[in-house]
Length: 88
Image (cartoon, rainbow, N blue to C red; front, side, top):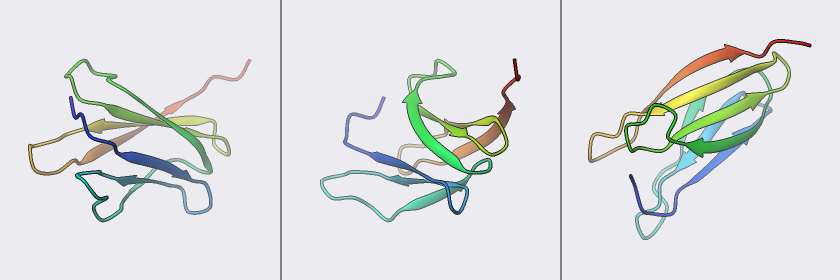
């Protein structure tokens, strides 16, 4: 699991999550497409591989985008999967 200070931000206007990796100073911002109107983002190891993944709540289409960390030792890449949220 990475032990550096990284930042992830939900961008509701362009339906992305921005990730800035911290290695003493932040590296170039990487944007990942998520569902419509991402309003928040959280980190957790969702697939138990000892790497922090991200989840973004998308309010306009009632989905959660799960971005799985595919770190290869030199960079981080995320795979996005939109999961519908059932309405009650």
